[in-house]
Image 1 (tube, rainbow, N blue to C red):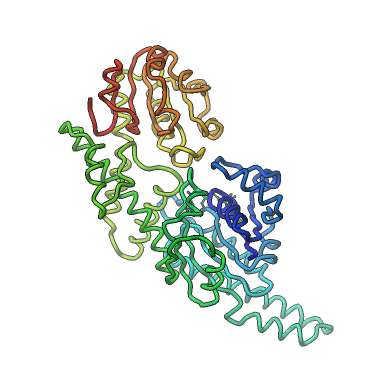
Image 2 (image 1 turned 180 degrees about the horizontal axis):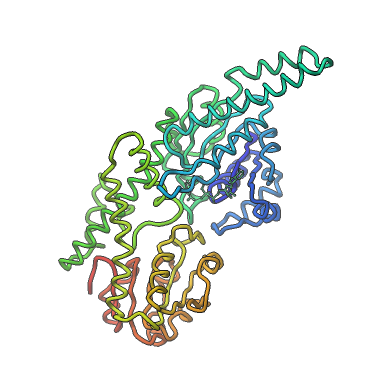
Length: 461
Ligand code: NAD
Protein backbone atom coordinates (compact mmCIF):
# COMPACT_ATOMS: atom_id res chain seq x y z
CA UNK A 1 0.00 0.00 0.00
CA UNK A 2 1.24 3.55 -0.71
CA UNK A 3 1.14 5.60 2.47
CA UNK A 4 1.87 9.26 3.23
CA UNK A 5 2.80 10.39 6.72
CA UNK A 6 2.33 14.12 7.29
CA UNK A 7 4.40 15.25 10.27
CA UNK A 8 7.62 13.28 10.79
CA UNK A 9 8.02 13.80 14.53
CA UNK A 10 8.16 11.11 17.23
CA UNK A 11 4.89 9.51 16.16
CA UNK A 12 5.01 10.10 12.41
CA UNK A 13 8.58 8.97 11.89
CA UNK A 14 8.27 5.80 13.98
CA UNK A 15 4.93 4.96 12.32
CA UNK A 16 6.31 5.63 8.83
CA UNK A 17 9.44 3.55 9.39
CA UNK A 18 7.39 0.67 10.87
CA UNK A 19 4.88 0.73 7.97
CA UNK A 20 7.85 0.53 5.57
CA UNK A 21 9.25 -2.37 7.59
CA UNK A 22 5.89 -4.14 7.10
CA UNK A 23 6.34 -3.81 3.34
CA UNK A 24 4.35 -0.66 2.55
CA UNK A 25 5.77 2.14 0.41
CA UNK A 26 5.91 5.22 2.62
CA UNK A 27 6.61 8.93 2.09
CA UNK A 28 7.21 10.86 5.30
CA UNK A 29 6.65 14.61 5.02
CA UNK A 30 7.62 17.41 7.35
CA UNK A 31 7.38 21.19 7.00
CA UNK A 32 10.68 21.53 8.89
CA UNK A 33 13.19 21.35 6.06
CA UNK A 34 16.12 20.83 8.46
CA UNK A 35 14.49 17.60 9.71
CA UNK A 36 13.87 16.39 6.15
CA UNK A 37 17.46 17.17 5.18
CA UNK A 38 18.71 15.02 8.07
CA UNK A 39 16.20 12.25 7.36
CA UNK A 40 17.22 12.07 3.71
CA UNK A 41 20.67 11.15 5.05
CA UNK A 42 19.04 8.40 7.15
CA UNK A 43 19.43 10.32 10.43
CA UNK A 44 16.45 10.76 12.77
CA UNK A 45 16.26 14.06 14.66
CA UNK A 46 15.59 12.34 18.00
CA UNK A 47 16.73 9.24 19.83
CA UNK A 48 14.64 6.08 19.73
CA UNK A 49 16.30 2.69 20.00
CA UNK A 50 16.45 0.81 16.68
CA UNK A 51 14.90 3.64 14.66
CA UNK A 52 17.98 4.84 12.77
CA UNK A 53 18.81 1.31 11.54
CA UNK A 54 15.19 0.72 10.52
CA UNK A 55 15.06 4.00 8.58
CA UNK A 56 18.30 3.27 6.75
CA UNK A 57 17.29 -0.33 5.96
CA UNK A 58 13.99 0.75 4.42
CA UNK A 59 15.55 3.64 2.49
CA UNK A 60 17.91 1.10 0.93
CA UNK A 61 14.97 -1.23 0.17
CA UNK A 62 13.23 1.59 -1.68
CA UNK A 63 10.25 1.57 0.68
CA UNK A 64 10.86 4.74 2.72
CA UNK A 65 11.16 8.27 1.30
CA UNK A 66 11.25 11.76 2.75
CA UNK A 67 9.84 14.95 1.30
CA UNK A 68 8.85 18.51 2.21
CA UNK A 69 5.94 18.40 -0.22
CA UNK A 70 2.49 17.36 0.98
CA UNK A 71 1.36 17.61 -2.64
CA UNK A 72 3.90 15.02 -3.83
CA UNK A 73 3.06 12.65 -0.96
CA UNK A 74 -0.72 12.94 -1.42
CA UNK A 75 -0.48 12.39 -5.16
CA UNK A 76 1.57 9.21 -4.69
CA UNK A 77 -0.36 7.69 -1.76
CA UNK A 78 -3.78 6.17 -1.13
CA UNK A 79 -3.72 6.63 2.65
CA UNK A 80 -2.65 9.87 4.32
CA UNK A 81 -1.85 9.78 8.05
CA UNK A 82 -1.95 13.16 9.82
CA UNK A 83 0.70 13.02 12.57
CA UNK A 84 1.34 16.70 13.28
CA UNK A 85 1.51 18.15 16.78
CA UNK A 86 -1.59 19.22 18.72
CA UNK A 87 0.08 21.42 21.36
CA UNK A 88 -1.82 23.10 24.19
CA UNK A 89 -3.04 26.70 23.92
CA UNK A 90 -2.52 28.84 27.06
CA UNK A 91 -6.01 27.85 28.28
CA UNK A 92 -5.25 24.11 27.95
CA UNK A 93 -7.32 23.61 24.81
CA UNK A 94 -5.64 21.62 22.00
CA UNK A 95 -4.32 23.84 19.21
CA UNK A 96 -5.62 22.21 16.04
CA UNK A 97 -4.22 24.76 13.59
CA UNK A 98 -1.55 22.30 12.33
CA UNK A 99 -4.24 19.69 11.69
CA UNK A 100 -6.37 22.26 9.86
CA UNK A 101 -3.45 23.47 7.71
CA UNK A 102 -2.60 19.92 6.69
CA UNK A 103 -6.25 19.14 5.89
CA UNK A 104 -6.40 22.17 3.57
CA UNK A 105 -3.19 21.19 1.79
CA UNK A 106 -4.30 17.58 1.45
CA UNK A 107 -7.65 18.70 -0.05
CA UNK A 108 -5.87 20.88 -2.60
CA UNK A 109 -3.54 18.06 -3.63
CA UNK A 110 -5.99 15.13 -3.86
CA UNK A 111 -6.27 13.93 -7.47
CA UNK A 112 -8.80 11.14 -6.75
CA UNK A 113 -10.09 9.05 -3.80
CA UNK A 114 -7.90 9.25 -0.68
CA UNK A 115 -8.30 8.01 2.89
CA UNK A 116 -7.24 10.64 5.43
CA UNK A 117 -6.46 9.22 8.86
CA UNK A 118 -6.05 11.33 12.00
CA UNK A 119 -3.30 9.77 14.11
CA UNK A 120 -2.52 12.89 16.13
CA UNK A 121 -4.26 13.04 19.50
CA UNK A 122 -7.28 15.26 18.90
CA UNK A 123 -10.46 16.28 20.72
CA UNK A 124 -13.64 14.33 20.03
CA UNK A 125 -15.39 15.64 16.88
CA UNK A 126 -12.14 16.70 15.16
CA UNK A 127 -12.81 14.09 12.44
CA UNK A 128 -15.99 15.95 11.57
CA UNK A 129 -14.02 19.19 11.21
CA UNK A 130 -11.35 17.55 9.07
CA UNK A 131 -14.06 16.21 6.75
CA UNK A 132 -15.75 19.62 6.59
CA UNK A 133 -12.43 21.39 5.88
CA UNK A 134 -11.47 18.97 3.12
CA UNK A 135 -14.90 19.15 1.48
CA UNK A 136 -14.88 22.94 1.61
CA UNK A 137 -11.45 23.17 0.04
CA UNK A 138 -12.24 20.66 -2.70
CA UNK A 139 -15.29 22.78 -3.55
CA UNK A 140 -13.16 25.94 -3.59
CA UNK A 141 -10.60 24.27 -5.83
CA UNK A 142 -13.25 23.04 -8.25
CA UNK A 143 -15.04 26.39 -8.15
CA UNK A 144 -11.92 28.24 -9.19
CA UNK A 145 -11.15 25.65 -11.87
CA UNK A 146 -14.70 25.82 -13.26
CA UNK A 147 -14.62 29.58 -13.54
CA UNK A 148 -11.20 29.43 -15.18
CA UNK A 149 -12.55 26.86 -17.62
CA UNK A 150 -15.70 28.84 -18.39
CA UNK A 151 -13.69 31.89 -19.25
CA UNK A 152 -11.57 29.82 -21.57
CA UNK A 153 -13.45 28.98 -24.77
CA UNK A 154 -10.98 26.29 -25.63
CA UNK A 155 -11.88 24.28 -22.51
CA UNK A 156 -13.70 21.07 -23.42
CA UNK A 157 -16.96 19.91 -21.80
CA UNK A 158 -15.34 16.68 -20.65
CA UNK A 159 -13.04 18.56 -18.23
CA UNK A 160 -16.05 20.39 -16.71
CA UNK A 161 -18.04 17.24 -16.12
CA UNK A 162 -15.01 15.44 -14.72
CA UNK A 163 -14.52 18.23 -12.21
CA UNK A 164 -18.20 18.21 -11.26
CA UNK A 165 -18.00 14.52 -10.49
CA UNK A 166 -15.15 15.32 -8.09
CA UNK A 167 -17.75 16.93 -5.84
CA UNK A 168 -19.32 13.55 -5.21
CA UNK A 169 -19.21 12.35 -1.63
CA UNK A 170 -17.03 9.27 -2.16
CA UNK A 171 -13.90 11.18 -3.16
CA UNK A 172 -12.40 10.75 0.26
CA UNK A 173 -12.96 9.19 3.65
CA UNK A 174 -11.78 10.36 7.03
CA UNK A 175 -10.79 7.87 9.74
CA UNK A 176 -9.40 8.05 13.26
CA UNK A 177 -6.51 5.83 14.31
CA UNK A 178 -5.12 7.17 17.60
CA UNK A 179 -1.57 6.24 18.52
CA UNK A 180 -0.62 4.54 21.79
CA UNK A 181 3.13 3.98 21.31
CA UNK A 182 5.43 5.06 24.12
CA UNK A 183 8.69 6.87 23.52
CA UNK A 184 11.54 4.65 24.63
CA UNK A 185 9.81 1.47 23.43
CA UNK A 186 8.06 2.87 20.38
CA UNK A 187 9.07 0.27 17.79
CA UNK A 188 8.16 -2.65 20.03
CA UNK A 189 4.88 -0.92 20.89
CA UNK A 190 4.08 -0.46 17.20
CA UNK A 191 4.56 -4.14 16.36
CA UNK A 192 3.07 -5.50 19.61
CA UNK A 193 0.26 -3.14 20.58
CA UNK A 194 -2.35 -3.99 23.21
CA UNK A 195 -4.92 -3.03 20.56
CA UNK A 196 -5.35 -0.99 17.41
CA UNK A 197 -8.24 1.46 17.50
CA UNK A 198 -9.84 2.44 14.22
CA UNK A 199 -12.77 4.81 13.86
CA UNK A 200 -14.36 4.62 10.41
CA UNK A 201 -17.60 5.54 8.75
CA UNK A 202 -17.33 3.59 5.50
CA UNK A 203 -16.68 -0.02 4.54
CA UNK A 204 -14.03 1.13 2.06
CA UNK A 205 -12.02 2.94 4.75
CA UNK A 206 -12.34 -0.09 7.05
CA UNK A 207 -11.01 -2.49 4.40
CA UNK A 208 -8.08 -0.20 3.54
CA UNK A 209 -7.02 0.13 7.18
CA UNK A 210 -7.39 -3.62 7.72
CA UNK A 211 -4.94 -4.06 4.85
CA UNK A 212 -2.57 -1.42 6.27
CA UNK A 213 -2.30 -3.27 9.61
CA UNK A 214 -2.40 -6.80 8.14
CA UNK A 215 0.22 -8.91 9.92
CA UNK A 216 0.02 -7.20 13.31
CA UNK A 217 -1.30 -9.74 15.76
CA UNK A 218 -3.69 -7.88 18.04
CA UNK A 219 -7.35 -7.03 18.41
CA UNK A 220 -8.50 -4.26 16.10
CA UNK A 221 -11.27 -2.23 17.70
CA UNK A 222 -13.43 -0.92 14.86
CA UNK A 223 -15.74 1.81 15.98
CA UNK A 224 -17.11 5.19 14.93
CA UNK A 225 -14.75 8.17 14.62
CA UNK A 226 -15.94 10.00 17.76
CA UNK A 227 -15.55 6.92 19.96
CA UNK A 228 -12.04 6.30 18.59
CA UNK A 229 -11.08 9.90 19.38
CA UNK A 230 -12.46 9.56 22.89
CA UNK A 231 -10.65 6.25 23.53
CA UNK A 232 -7.31 8.07 23.21
CA UNK A 233 -8.11 10.92 25.62
CA UNK A 234 -9.82 8.52 28.04
CA UNK A 235 -6.78 6.18 28.01
CA UNK A 236 -4.21 8.87 28.73
CA UNK A 237 -6.40 10.46 31.38
CA UNK A 238 -6.93 7.10 33.09
CA UNK A 239 -3.17 6.41 33.16
CA UNK A 240 -2.51 9.90 34.54
CA UNK A 241 -5.16 9.21 37.17
CA UNK A 242 -3.33 6.03 38.27
CA UNK A 243 -0.11 8.02 38.70
CA UNK A 244 -1.80 10.76 40.72
CA UNK A 245 -3.59 8.11 42.80
CA UNK A 246 -0.38 6.35 43.81
CA UNK A 247 1.29 9.72 44.46
CA UNK A 248 -1.58 10.55 46.83
CA UNK A 249 -1.06 7.18 48.54
CA UNK A 250 2.65 8.05 48.84
CA UNK A 251 1.73 11.12 50.87
CA UNK A 252 -0.24 8.95 53.29
CA UNK A 253 2.73 6.55 53.46
CA UNK A 254 5.06 9.41 54.35
CA UNK A 255 2.75 10.48 57.18
CA UNK A 256 2.46 6.95 58.59
CA UNK A 257 5.74 5.20 57.83
CA UNK A 258 4.16 2.73 55.39
CA UNK A 259 6.05 1.85 52.19
CA UNK A 260 4.40 3.00 48.95
CA UNK A 261 6.34 0.47 46.88
CA UNK A 262 4.82 -2.38 48.90
CA UNK A 263 1.36 -0.79 48.81
CA UNK A 264 1.62 -0.44 45.02
CA UNK A 265 2.77 -4.05 44.70
CA UNK A 266 -0.10 -5.39 46.80
CA UNK A 267 -2.58 -3.14 45.01
CA UNK A 268 -1.36 -3.99 41.52
CA UNK A 269 -1.67 -7.74 41.97
CA UNK A 270 -5.42 -7.27 41.83
CA UNK A 271 -6.18 -7.97 38.15
CA UNK A 272 -8.97 -5.40 38.21
CA UNK A 273 -6.36 -2.73 39.03
CA UNK A 274 -3.17 -3.99 37.32
CA UNK A 275 0.48 -3.35 38.16
CA UNK A 276 1.31 -0.71 35.57
CA UNK A 277 1.41 3.03 36.24
CA UNK A 278 1.47 2.57 40.00
CA UNK A 279 4.97 4.01 40.43
CA UNK A 280 5.12 7.00 42.72
CA UNK A 281 7.56 9.75 41.93
CA UNK A 282 7.69 13.38 40.85
CA UNK A 283 4.58 13.10 38.70
CA UNK A 284 3.90 12.63 35.04
CA UNK A 285 5.41 14.84 32.35
CA UNK A 286 6.31 14.52 28.70
CA UNK A 287 4.63 15.56 25.49
CA UNK A 288 1.34 13.72 26.06
CA UNK A 289 -0.12 13.32 29.57
CA UNK A 290 0.00 16.97 30.75
CA UNK A 291 -1.42 18.33 27.51
CA UNK A 292 -3.94 15.54 27.00
CA UNK A 293 -5.30 15.84 30.55
CA UNK A 294 -5.63 19.62 30.06
CA UNK A 295 -7.29 19.16 26.69
CA UNK A 296 -9.75 16.59 28.05
CA UNK A 297 -10.71 18.87 30.95
CA UNK A 298 -11.28 21.61 28.40
CA UNK A 299 -13.33 19.35 26.09
CA UNK A 300 -15.55 18.33 29.02
CA UNK A 301 -15.99 21.97 30.11
CA UNK A 302 -16.99 22.92 26.57
CA UNK A 303 -19.55 20.11 26.57
CA UNK A 304 -20.99 21.42 29.85
CA UNK A 305 -19.49 18.74 32.10
CA UNK A 306 -17.28 19.61 35.05
CA UNK A 307 -14.69 16.78 34.97
CA UNK A 308 -13.72 17.35 38.62
CA UNK A 309 -12.01 13.94 38.91
CA UNK A 310 -9.55 14.87 36.15
CA UNK A 311 -9.04 18.34 37.61
CA UNK A 312 -7.95 16.66 40.85
CA UNK A 313 -5.55 14.40 38.89
CA UNK A 314 -3.90 17.51 37.47
CA UNK A 315 -3.78 19.25 40.86
CA UNK A 316 -2.09 16.26 42.55
CA UNK A 317 0.46 16.11 39.73
CA UNK A 318 1.30 19.81 39.97
CA UNK A 319 1.71 19.51 43.75
CA UNK A 320 3.99 16.50 43.38
CA UNK A 321 6.80 18.53 41.81
CA UNK A 322 6.39 21.30 44.40
CA UNK A 323 6.58 18.73 47.23
CA UNK A 324 9.78 17.32 45.78
CA UNK A 325 11.38 20.77 45.61
CA UNK A 326 10.34 21.27 49.24
CA UNK A 327 12.11 18.00 50.15
CA UNK A 328 15.32 19.31 48.54
CA UNK A 329 15.01 22.62 50.41
CA UNK A 330 14.30 20.93 53.73
CA UNK A 331 17.24 18.57 53.40
CA UNK A 332 19.79 21.21 52.36
CA UNK A 333 18.36 24.18 54.33
CA UNK A 334 20.00 27.03 52.35
CA UNK A 335 20.23 26.35 48.63
CA UNK A 336 22.19 29.46 47.70
CA UNK A 337 25.69 28.49 46.51
CA UNK A 338 25.10 24.79 47.17
CA UNK A 339 26.03 22.42 44.35
CA UNK A 340 23.23 20.05 43.40
CA UNK A 341 23.96 17.16 41.09
CA UNK A 342 21.08 16.16 38.83
CA UNK A 343 20.87 12.66 37.37
CA UNK A 344 18.33 12.40 34.57
CA UNK A 345 16.81 15.18 32.49
CA UNK A 346 14.50 13.52 29.92
CA UNK A 347 10.87 13.09 30.95
CA UNK A 348 11.37 9.31 31.08
CA UNK A 349 14.19 6.83 30.40
CA UNK A 350 15.25 5.64 26.93
CA UNK A 351 14.33 8.87 25.18
CA UNK A 352 15.94 12.27 24.68
CA UNK A 353 12.55 14.02 24.81
CA UNK A 354 12.58 17.01 27.15
CA UNK A 355 9.07 18.26 26.39
CA UNK A 356 7.34 18.98 29.71
CA UNK A 357 10.04 17.03 31.58
CA UNK A 358 9.65 17.54 35.37
CA UNK A 359 13.41 18.32 35.37
CA UNK A 360 12.70 21.68 33.73
CA UNK A 361 10.55 23.09 36.55
CA UNK A 362 12.66 21.49 39.28
CA UNK A 363 16.01 22.74 37.92
CA UNK A 364 14.61 26.22 37.27
CA UNK A 365 13.32 26.37 40.84
CA UNK A 366 16.72 25.32 42.25
CA UNK A 367 18.38 27.93 40.06
CA UNK A 368 15.92 30.52 41.39
CA UNK A 369 17.09 29.69 44.93
CA UNK A 370 20.71 30.34 43.94
CA UNK A 371 21.93 26.73 43.69
CA UNK A 372 24.61 25.66 41.22
CA UNK A 373 23.66 22.65 39.11
CA UNK A 374 25.74 19.82 37.71
CA UNK A 375 23.69 17.64 35.37
CA UNK A 376 23.90 14.47 33.33
CA UNK A 377 21.53 12.46 31.17
CA UNK A 378 22.49 9.51 28.93
CA UNK A 379 20.60 10.88 25.89
CA UNK A 380 18.99 14.25 26.53
CA UNK A 381 22.09 16.44 27.08
CA UNK A 382 21.92 18.16 23.68
CA UNK A 383 18.24 19.05 24.09
CA UNK A 384 18.79 20.09 27.72
CA UNK A 385 21.65 22.41 26.69
CA UNK A 386 19.25 24.32 24.46
CA UNK A 387 16.84 24.74 27.40
CA UNK A 388 19.25 25.56 30.27
CA UNK A 389 21.94 28.11 29.53
CA UNK A 390 24.39 29.94 31.77
CA UNK A 391 27.25 29.56 34.18
CA UNK A 392 24.95 28.24 36.93
CA UNK A 393 24.65 24.85 35.15
CA UNK A 394 27.46 22.50 34.25
CA UNK A 395 26.78 19.56 31.97
CA UNK A 396 28.87 16.55 33.01
CA UNK A 397 30.30 13.47 31.32
CA UNK A 398 28.67 10.94 33.61
CA UNK A 399 27.14 10.31 37.05
CA UNK A 400 30.51 10.24 38.85
CA UNK A 401 31.46 13.56 37.31
CA UNK A 402 28.14 14.92 38.63
CA UNK A 403 28.86 13.54 42.11
CA UNK A 404 32.29 15.20 42.41
CA UNK A 405 31.90 18.02 44.96
CA UNK A 406 28.08 17.90 45.06
CA UNK A 407 26.20 18.77 48.23
CA UNK A 408 23.37 16.50 47.11
CA UNK A 409 22.35 14.33 44.20
CA UNK A 410 18.83 14.57 42.88
CA UNK A 411 17.48 11.72 40.70
CA UNK A 412 14.88 12.88 38.20
CA UNK A 413 14.79 10.09 35.57
CA UNK A 414 15.02 6.35 36.28
CA UNK A 415 17.64 5.42 33.66
CA UNK A 416 18.98 1.89 34.15
CA UNK A 417 22.50 3.35 34.19
CA UNK A 418 21.68 5.01 37.54
CA UNK A 419 20.23 1.86 39.08
CA UNK A 420 23.56 0.06 38.71
CA UNK A 421 25.84 2.85 39.96
CA UNK A 422 28.81 2.05 42.19
CA UNK A 423 27.34 3.80 45.21
CA UNK A 424 30.49 3.57 47.32
CA UNK A 425 32.47 5.34 44.61
CA UNK A 426 29.69 7.89 44.25
CA UNK A 427 29.66 8.61 47.99
CA UNK A 428 33.41 9.16 48.11
CA UNK A 429 33.14 11.82 45.38
CA UNK A 430 30.31 13.78 47.02
CA UNK A 431 30.85 16.63 49.46
CA UNK A 432 27.84 15.46 51.42
CA UNK A 433 26.33 11.95 51.04
CA UNK A 434 22.76 13.07 50.40
CA UNK A 435 20.56 11.59 47.66
CA UNK A 436 17.05 12.86 47.01
CA UNK A 437 15.46 10.35 44.70
CA UNK A 438 12.35 11.40 42.77
CA UNK A 439 12.03 7.98 41.15
CA UNK A 440 12.51 5.53 44.05
CA UNK A 441 15.26 3.58 42.31
CA UNK A 442 17.13 2.46 45.47
CA UNK A 443 16.23 0.55 48.60
CA UNK A 444 16.17 3.02 51.54
CA UNK A 445 17.50 0.43 54.01
CA UNK A 446 20.47 -0.40 51.77
CA UNK A 447 21.20 3.29 51.26
CA UNK A 448 21.17 3.90 55.02
CA UNK A 449 23.58 1.01 55.52
CA UNK A 450 25.91 2.52 52.92
CA UNK A 451 25.95 5.74 54.93
CA UNK A 452 23.75 7.88 52.72
CA UNK A 453 21.03 10.24 53.83
CA UNK A 454 18.46 8.97 51.36
CA UNK A 455 15.18 10.77 50.80
CA UNK A 456 12.67 9.36 48.34
CA UNK A 457 8.92 9.28 47.73
CA UNK A 458 6.51 7.52 50.07
CA UNK A 459 9.06 5.35 51.89
CA UNK A 460 11.61 5.65 54.66
CA UNK A 461 14.53 3.51 55.83
P1 NAD B 1 6.24 16.18 17.10
O1 NAD B 1 6.23 17.62 17.44
O2 NAD B 1 7.43 15.36 17.44
O3 NAD B 1 5.97 15.99 15.53
C1 NAD B 1 5.08 16.75 14.79
C2 NAD B 1 5.75 17.07 13.46
O4 NAD B 1 4.80 17.68 12.58
C3 NAD B 1 6.90 18.06 13.59
O5 NAD B 1 8.09 17.49 13.09
C4 NAD B 1 6.47 19.27 12.77
O6 NAD B 1 7.54 19.93 12.12
C5 NAD B 1 5.50 18.62 11.79
N1 NAD B 1 4.54 19.53 11.16
C6 NAD B 1 3.83 20.55 11.71
N2 NAD B 1 3.06 21.15 10.78
C7 NAD B 1 3.28 20.49 9.62
C8 NAD B 1 2.78 20.63 8.30
N3 NAD B 1 1.88 21.58 7.98
N4 NAD B 1 3.22 19.80 7.34
C9 NAD B 1 4.12 18.82 7.64
N5 NAD B 1 4.63 18.64 8.87
C10 NAD B 1 4.21 19.46 9.85
O7 NAD B 1 4.94 15.56 17.78
P2 NAD B 1 4.70 14.04 18.21
O8 NAD B 1 5.24 13.79 19.55
O9 NAD B 1 5.07 13.15 17.08
O10 NAD B 1 3.12 14.04 18.35
C11 NAD B 1 2.26 14.12 17.22
C12 NAD B 1 0.85 13.81 17.67
O11 NAD B 1 0.80 12.46 18.17
C13 NAD B 1 0.36 14.69 18.81
O12 NAD B 1 -1.01 14.91 18.65
C14 NAD B 1 0.61 13.84 20.05
O13 NAD B 1 -0.24 14.15 21.11
C15 NAD B 1 0.32 12.45 19.51
N6 NAD B 1 1.01 11.37 20.23
C16 NAD B 1 2.29 11.52 20.64
C17 NAD B 1 2.93 10.46 21.29
C18 NAD B 1 4.35 10.60 21.78
O14 NAD B 1 4.78 9.77 22.59
N7 NAD B 1 5.11 11.58 21.33
C19 NAD B 1 2.25 9.26 21.52
C20 NAD B 1 0.94 9.13 21.06
C21 NAD B 1 0.33 10.20 20.41
